[in-house]
Length: 103
Image 1 (cartoon, helix red, strand yellow):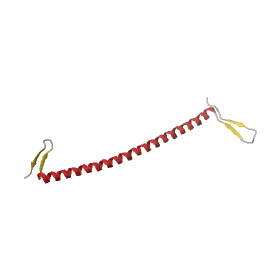
Image 2 (image 1 turned 180 degrees about the vertical axis):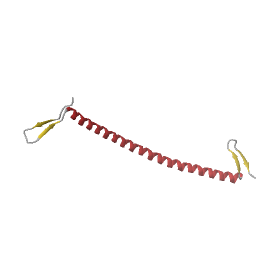
Image 3 (image 1 turned 60 degrees about the horizontal axis):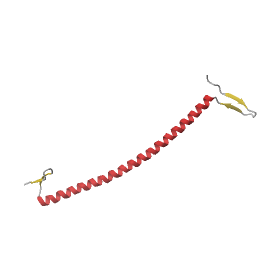
Image 4 (image 1 turned 180 degrees about the horizontal axis):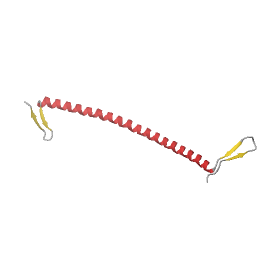
């Protein structure tokens, strides 16, 4: 059975209202829910910061590896040029190491 809100007369000209226990519990529940949601929002904000830091680190590492990859490509071009100067144009079988010059 629900309690009724009671109006209490005070000695001054103001009227005080006394909430029921159920109403007080509802208000406390709302306050608790707000606090919980604020805490979760804070945790999510921190997680977002950490994820952004990880993304930045991944982007930096990706840039580094791209430069390294380009360096390897240049090494390959240099080696091919050196081998072409030494042996002339032809085909190399990388598994057997046999070079067949083209005529």
